[in-house]
Length: 362
Image: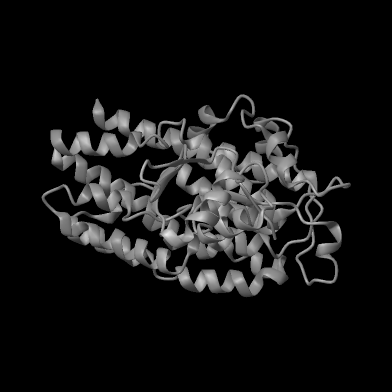
């Protein structure tokens, strides 16, 4: 497999030559360099975009592949032959517009979500698909598509309210103004997390029979996620809040229902969508935990910390890649379904946070 650095990766060496900064719209890292490693790393950073196949470029990315800074180059069609991979299934979903997609997808959109249906697609679908197209065919490498899609999502989010930490800033401001309201919002967030962790196994269950070649990995992930709702119940206990007093938002329900739907019709969309449940990469601590620790009840963050620690240690962010690497080449229909599902679901969730912030700011 050949790694391709994302086109927005920038490298800036420090004046001392002993470190450099790697930056993307969604990530910035300062990396120290040992004197003995400097020659090959300098060559790698010089040829990063000029010659991605360069041996030192590949070595460089291999050292940093825990972070979403790359995508994989499409394999040849013959590379898939002779392997026990999940086939690409026949699909009948009209993805020409968001409304056509939702009308033919087979998953109900409740009334309070309808105002947030996109009037038209805004993502550059052709750009994403082109990154994954298998040479000489009208098929797409599922691993290439998913690895590039994750980066595309992060780039898109860097321009959105949520991606620019609008929600985090709202929480910090609310904490300073009214701690009781802040705890109510944390309760609301925790209820969404509780519901997701409670229902995630149910949403994945159809894939065990629909996509038999993924069964072992899906079962492993389901077992790994089992019982995680208890972490959120710990948060409610520490805050002295009644879990039942908080609703499960329609957008949160859509997230689980739509994942369950693709668990029956599209192994590509099913695999990719796990990225919407898990962090794309892991930083020092959970962002909600960080804000709770600024409050008068910092111990209430431990449920988030324990959940984050397990996900981090078990590398749940890699699950979309693990699953997509076990799929046959994909048709354009499955690619468009996956892109449309990502864009519309992320928009539902983004609007959900914005509306919650407005409600508590009024």
